[in-house]
Structure formats: structure tokens, C-alpha cells
Image (cartoon, rainbow, N blue to C red; front, side, top):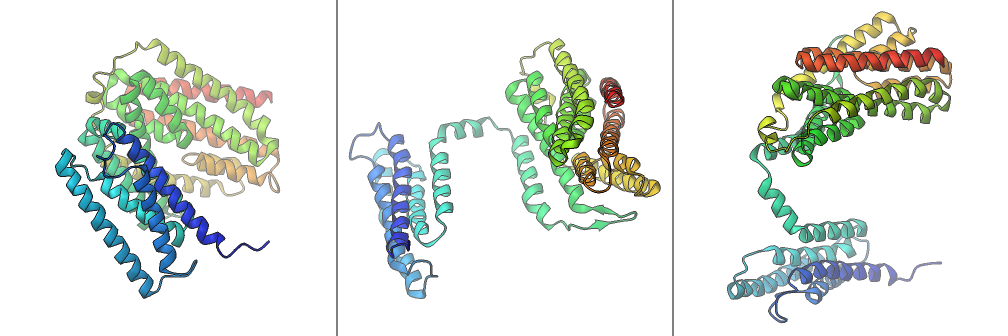
Length: 428
């Protein structure tokens, strides 16, 4: 059934009106204590503002076509006139009640723009922007409290992490550089972002949940991304504070448990035949790692968290994170060299070399080979070899970066996991 010629523009104008009512509802609720007639704008004003923006856009040009010069001038004149009228009333209200906030005026201008965009642009984007803007307006008190408690170091680290992710990453070339197949610069930078993100999440968790619970939470979350990154971050913390080594080892152990479960899930989804031969050893190892983490954390006395900001002064050090990423890049080249030495036909050796740094890629590669080149038994042994090499890498990291106490704890749990997985593999 063909849509009516009025259906599309009418739905756009209706959305514009709805956006105005949504933002107006929040604005009206925020000023509900004020006497009627003393507010510059409420639900009705914002609703009409959104409707006005939609109608102006509908008059400016035909539906679905770019605006002409005349339509663009009409839109610009209408917006300027509305802005002048609303700002004039808002300014007079500011002198009357002493309210110096520009939020109401900016919200009204945004309502007009979103109303117009509902007709001229993508309605999904317009609706999402309206919900997001209303959320920011509604959570004003919470945002103000958060800004009041944030430290300068946290702000700098957060901005550095955002710059690494959204400014530097898009311009870094996605190609290999160097011998033995080289190192992909983008992959190394992604490793740096993962290290920084794990450190930042760990810092935030420790600050808001206390050291004992915060470290375990950050370890579990980090294990979903990279248990190796968690190991590096915790080793650096342990090197700075010897007393926290047992708890940091527990968080590392929990990240390993999550990583084992993740590999099991990837293997089972890509090749169900691998679920038992891969899942049985890794789930047993995950249970041992999780038990160690919980017991180690349970034995540690609860802390008040009062001294935590002094213990971890900065969520992460930019240059130390870059240095660690460069070290990981060197290890990537070493892994490729080992793989070349063993040859592509040596599946287990190749999987062990791949697993040094990228367990997920190794798991996906081996699981896909089960459909045409490898038997489930051979593929499961290769996957377990890759996981074992990655686990041994954590022992190396703990010994080089962390202090002796942290290295001992990590070494014990890694060897216990490898031994348990080996026994389960033989039995299955």
C-alpha cells in the first residue's frame, strides 16, 4: 500500500513536537518549585519550540531534497529570530531572579534545531540526540558532584586515553613495518590503548569500590579484553607498592579465569567439536584460578580506601604504557620468528607462537582449520598450547615488571593452571 504524500512530513513534524515535549518535561520538572508565570520556559514552550522547528523545516524545502538557497536563508532567518526572542526573555529573567545559567537558552536552541532536523535529516539521530540531551539535563546534580570530586590527574589520564583512541588511532597506518613480517603499528597502538584502558578502569574501580573489591572487579573486566594487559598493569602497581602484591596477583588470577572461559566460548561457538576437548581443561584451570583469586582476596583484610588515591596517584603513565606496547611489539616479532622457525606445518608450534600475545586470533585460526585441515583433537591441542604459552608469558611479565612477591604468586597460579589443564587434557 502506497504511503500518503502527507505521511512522511507529518511524521517528521510529530517527532519534532515530541522532542520538544521530552526536553520540556525535564525543564519543567527542574523548575517545578517556581511560581507559575515566573519561568522563562516550561513543557508548553519547549514543545512549541520543537514544533516550530519542524514546521519551519517543512516550509523551507520539499521532503527528502537538499535545501535551496532560498530555503537555507529562510531557515537561518527563522533560527536567528527565534534565538533573539528567546535570549531576550532569558536575559530579562536572569536579572529578575538572579539565575545566571545559560542551560535553558541553549536547550531551547537545541530543541529548535532538533525539531528542524527531524524533518530534514535522519529521524533516528534526532531522537537519539534528544534522549541524550535530556539525560544530560536530568543528571545535572550527579554530573556536578562527579566533576567536583575528579582530580587533575584523572582528568589528564582520561583525556589522554580519549586522544589515544579517537585522535591518534585513526591516523596510525595499518601496515606492517620491520623484519620477519614486521609489526603492525596500529595493532601495537591498540595494545597501548588496551593497557591504558585496563589501568584506568582498575584505578576507577579501586577508588569507588575500595582496593580489595575494586582490584577484583577491574581484573574480571580486564580479562574480557586482555588478561595480558591486566598482568602488565598489575605488575606495575605491585612494583610501586609491595604490600598490594597478593591482592594484585588475585586480580590477575581472576583475569586469567575470565580469559580461559572466553577461549572456551570462542572455540565452542566456531567449532562445537572443540567444546569438550578444549573446554574441559580450560574450565578446570579457570576454576582453580578463580578459587585462588577469591581465597587470596578473602584472606586480605578489608581496607577503608582512604589512602588509595595516594597509593595510585595516576591512573596510568602515558610513556610507560607506550614503552610496554613497544615491548609487546618486540615480542610479536619474536613470535613470528619462532613461527617461521617451526614452519607453518608445525601447527602446535605456530599456535604457541601466536598465543604469546593474541590468544583470540590463535583460537579463531585453529577453530576454523577444524573444518578442512585439522582434526578436533589436533586443533584442541594447538589451542591449549597457545593458551599455555600465553600463560607462561604472564610469568615472564610478572618476573620482569613486578616485584618478587607478585612474581611468586603469579608463577604458582599459572603453573597450577597449566598442570591442571594438562591432566584434564590427557584424561579427555
